[in-house]
Length: 249
Length: 247
Image 1 (cartoon, rainbow over the protein chains, first blue to last red):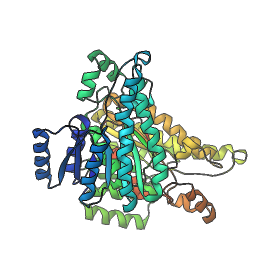
Image 2: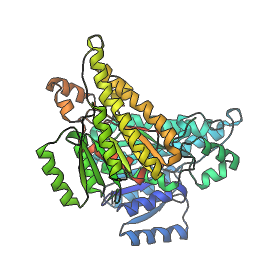
Image 3: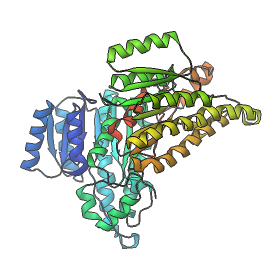
Image 4: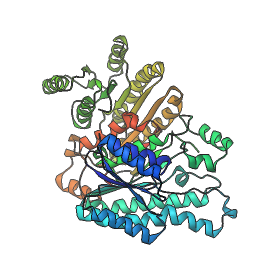
């Protein structure tokens, strides 16, 4: 129970890593604003059950993070609850694979819109609140693709590199307000996103590059987020923590 | 209780970061092989109290890391007692600060002996046990000076940089046995080591830290707990900075 009594916002909770984060945060005693793009009965029910089984408040919030107005509404809902926001996990993201010369500017902009600009916009709202509280922990999801060179990942990798850089700058700017800002750089993780965007041969090749010779589990990325959100990491800020099974390029 | 049922071997338990790690690990349910340079009545009292309070076993091992024979006989005792070791925390370390020009080879060798060679020897013995178990996690304590450099700390920073190289190589060699190897790189932490820094200099150092303060030994122990526990089961070959944002 590393997050007892903390209130967190997690984006991209519908599936994959975000879904596991939601579960891990609830199991560690956090109340969570669980953000996803599309409302489903399944997710409503999931949040209700998760909250009940962990005696935590799990509140679904539905908005498209690229829609500024919808985001503002969601933020208003959070503010209206008049509770602290201790943790923000900017997890929502999209992937895109194409060689650099085949990447249209439209695609490049679309990837940055979701993976970078939307995160900036949401974070700016939340930081205002954290500054007032004089405490907070922000966790951005970068990627090993931001730090290593992976062919076909120019748009995705660059957007995640922008996230990593912003993380370090924000850590500097916000430290005096007692707000920590860190990023996680997952390697190849066993999610739908990887399944949809990589061929099984490419996945096998990537696994070969990890020291642990296996894909990461979404829960293992979630556990790193729990650590960074918790007071175990109270002197850790501006870090990009690779959770990649020891990936070697 | 992140370490229930696990056993940790910790060097440098007598004070500072090592002592904090000992407490945090015991409170998280780990049995501990507590390695200290020498016997100490205050430590002994604390050890017994902590063991009684937490219900774990804390076995002291006394040896000097500058003495290879003492290390070997202690490690043989660990093996003879058929102890399993799930976690190795190589914490003990030393520094001898001087400008590069003024650093004698004897001083350079002393620092490397404690900060690097002795750790390698301990790791060799313990990793043998871990290979047999087919599981384990090793945590080396490097320093931000290994990455950033620091005036007057050639020998210290170089010895700590050597640990980073060893960490990454061991992570590669031991992964197939399900042994994870990581390092931490603390920044300016309030310990006896930094207490020796004149107050004015220390203040100046702290003014460079975005968080505006030195770290606490307990905060370093917190990151060690993460790396020692299953929370970091997909993390290996990494160097984690704990520096209040200096990096």
